Every structure is written in structure tokens, then in C-alpha cells.
Length: 118
Image (cartoon, rainbow, N blue to C red):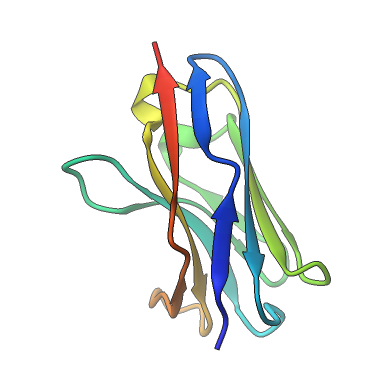
């Protein structure tokens, strides 16, 4: 069993930056895809960025060129660098682990709030 704990959220002005971190309690070597997801108030949870165990990345169109996901299997961490933040990026951000890489999230973190003021 793997537990995921996010940190790094907060309040930032539009145009600013934040770095989110997700630390795993156990090994993430066997988790094929690690991702960051977000859920804004009244909306469904959506994929923001994902990274495979081999380092391939995938981003939502709305964050391409602004967000960067990275993964360190040795440190058991996944990070999301968020630049040029916009008010529409405001949401609770969750770290998720998809063991088989087939779209089913096996592990979720508790979430961290990101608020971008205009």
C-alpha cells in the first residue's frame, strides 16, 4: 500500500508560480503513471499532467507550456512546477498513482488547495 501526501499549495497572484510536491510512503517504482489532477468548485476532477515510469509526460491543453511535471523514483516524489498561474487554475490539486497505467487510479493523496487571485 502506498500513501501519497501533497504539499506546496497556497495563495498566489495571477502570473505567479507555485511548486507542488507529492511524497510517497512507499516505493513508486512499480507505479506506471503518476499524475496531478485538479478539481475546481462545482466541476469534475480532471487530469493536469502525468508522467510514466520511463519519463514520458502528458499535459492538459490548458496548462501546456506553463506547468512541468517531474518524477524522482529514488526520492519517491512527484512534483508539479506551475508558472504563469491564472485564476482559472484555482482548484484542489491531487496526486494520483496508476499502477497498471490503464487509467484506473489506485492511490490518491488528500489534496492541496491552490488559489490564484486576479
